[in-house]
Image 1 (cartoon, rainbow, N blue to C red):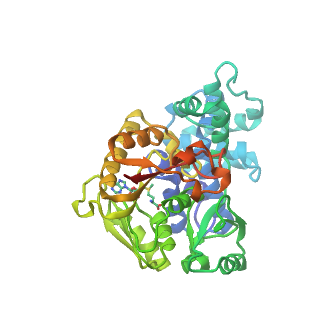
Image 2: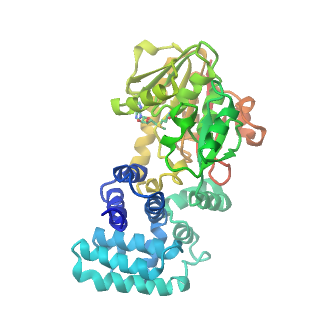
Image 3: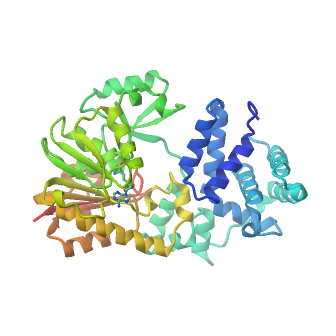
Length: 450
Ligand SMILES: C[S@@+](CC[C@H](N)C(=O)[O-])C[C@H]1O[C@@H](n2cnc3c(N)ncnc32)[C@H](O)[C@@H]1O
């Protein structure tokens, strides 16, 4: 308890918003923390870790609870379920809090939330788990490898099955391991405007730990800071938060000074700003997104980075814009996707997968790609990208696109570090897999209009 705020209660509230109201985890956590800005850094870190960890390990946690509770997790009242889940996360994964304190806090919280009669149940289940969890066996890998991987790495069986089929057991296990590995944030240094040394020194002067990121010389991994919004390099627009996979898009697009670039799905503007930086102050990036809310996010970034050659507009990429026909030197179609490549950052994605959503997203992507094709000048470039590792959204869409539009793939090797070169990059596309490559899961294909 700090300043009248009960940390466990705040954690419960955040988890209920994510699990019961369908909020995105990073938004629910960010909103709660910005409401209670006075909380000390250590407590903020604790809240973030417990919420993220409870979500990341939900399947394993439920397996543990179900092994020791008479009432199964899916039959419990949401408040009790989330109290137990977050307590089990602390017992299983955090040494900093004694198990007895975790149990006591959970029991008190159940009472405060009006579940007086369930106090003995919460107490009994948690104390048994604290005593017994080390003896609990996971499902047998030999008898049921899918169930084993699902519980061991907290990944729904549908996704495990899909990746086993697409990538084989070894790569799937690397992907699953990577999703549960904590990683620093990556930033792009805007070296077109500011010397990298100056950016490095500004970060280090504020106590930030700075390490080179993989694959691109102007990317850093940063850690050991409280708020990124309080870093001078960020405030002054010298850095942009972006995964290296996403930075590769502007490299591969290779815009030339004076080009007209359309970014069809641009918010919050990471790739638009990068492309604009690469063009210097020449040319225009037409950064579009579906809603004013999204366009405001792009505007905020334009303002902070003082990128004068990016213009943001509300425009629905599924609606054909006749004024853009054959106008663009470069079109970026960084389409909405299932997001499986960023499950490590947004763990709730893995629990919200349905076959229907998967089909709908492919249809949406193809509609956007149909329009994107029409905007590219003869001889111009279309870069298609997603942050997923689902074949139907990536390779299958790429093949479909080539069968339906007058474009050909073009080698992307000239824009990539040698360690990323492969048969597919020589052809014109790249599937990055978490744990196999040192980035988020991401797909990029480069087409040129015939
Ligand atoms: C992968 S994100 C884009 C990330 C962005 N390119 C960047 O690098 O910062 C996909 C974007 O597509 C937008 N979107 C979804 N449906 C859309 C539509 N029909 N028209 C335009 N944008 C759309 C979403 O709002 C979201 O901002």
